[in-house]
Amino acid sequence: SQETYGIRVVSQETYGQVCTVGLLSNVGSRHERANQVGVTHLLEMLAFQSTEKYTSGLEIMESLQDWGGTSFANTGREQTLHCVDILRPNVEKAMDLLSEVVLRPKFMDYEVEDCKKAIEYQYMDMMIEMILGETLQSAAYGEPNSQLGKPHFCPPEALPNLTADSVHEFWQTHMLQNPAGLVIAGAGIGHDELVDMSKHHFGQLEAHTYKDPTVDSVYTGGAASVKKETMEGFTRVALAFELGGWHSDDLVPTCVLQTLLGGGNSFSAGGPGKGMYSRLYRQVLNKYYWAESAEAFTAFHGESGLFGLSASCIPSKSRDATLVLADQLNELKTELVTDEEIDRARNMLKCNVLTQLESRLVLFEDMGRQVLTYGHREDTETMCRKIDSVTKEELRELAQRAMSKPPTIASVGDDVSTVPDFNEVVGWFK
Image 1 (cartoon, rainbow, N blue to C red):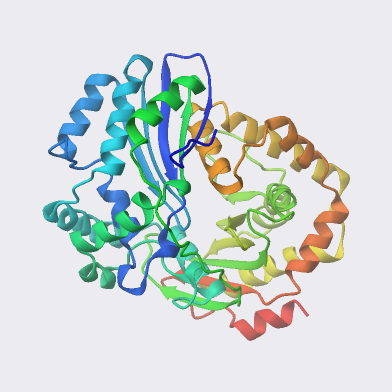
Image 2: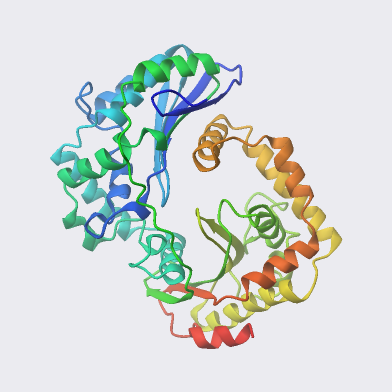
């Protein structure tokens, strides 16, 4: 429902003893100015710290323990999430806490400095896959001149620009002056109850003239590499192309194609059954001894999306790995997938989504992000029909359209010297 004070409210009753309530906003790292790079990453670290009512993050944590609750916060390139998972009798206290955290945070100097130190340590231990994703984004969209090409995780060189004042300014501008960009979601609570609580705790928000800072990014393609020491000495390579974003008809077919290709690591703990009949397991991981991992991935945004394959291997096989990934992609645009493959992919995708939605936290996030992105929530029956309607001809046409554009290549590792250059990779797709 759309409330008179601007915020939208969405809920689903689960009839359990625990509920999840939270607030999502359409602000992310793409909206940072040049002198604000890293502020949304910092805001994730600063979530559930001191407010006007609570003197410290420790007091909030102790209160949540007394109430039988726990808090979560997450920021991305386009959206921000704050939520509390709590015993149902204490949901009113959770909403009061959320209003404090969102409407009245203090962002004290010492808290900002402590979180900046934590980010420094995080950056040193950042997972290689996360660095690969950041490198891929900058290569695909041309960092720093495009919003989607900006780094999401705060680089160490940007930390000196971030102060308590700059954090306050960003929060005030993009959160408090933009109630139309906020969604309150609840899983395990009645809608009327959530609407009443939302009005009580957030009804004082006033609508402002908010100019949406989103500027569409243009996909350029390109290559980027990062030389970084890894624990096991492998080089990671990603090869991607542009497809449509969240609002495109490409969305569901791309997800089916990702599931069909599947993949994973060469070692699977806990026994078989984790996508081992997917194409990348059968045609890459089971075929090449040097392939430590190979998997399909997607990255969706408002105006654009990326679909591609990644692999890890010993440095001397980096060129071979990139060529194998290119061969897999080229096969998609020349040959139809089999009936067995597409049936398995459609069923697996439906199974994965429906299984995930059995989690209360996932249900909460799904409702909130759908309303924030589309203005409404699509039911599972409609989603399953869309998945079942995807054809193998549609997948081939999707691949052909994607590969008519320049590729994006990203690599990270101790030695990236044998990764093929951009022009060589372009030639593989002609």
